[in-house]
Length: 88
Image (cartoon, rainbow, N blue to C red; front, side, top):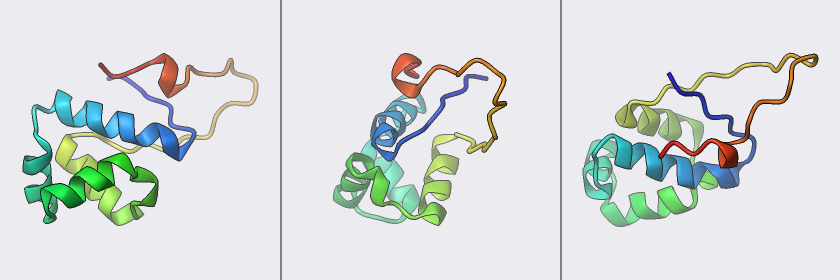
């Protein structure tokens, strides 16, 4: 299982797009499953920092992605950021 460290909201759009493509889904297919229009989903994917937690969790489920929260070990070496470990 790959891990991606998300530290800022501006990292989320690229991850959502990559996870969607990795799942082999179009924006239209995800939108239908999410219960929104393709245009609404496209805006959501571009502006993911405005998405509420409940909708984000539903979207991650559709994409087959699990949201795991951890507290970093202060003595451990800093993990790679999302920019350093792209999912594609």
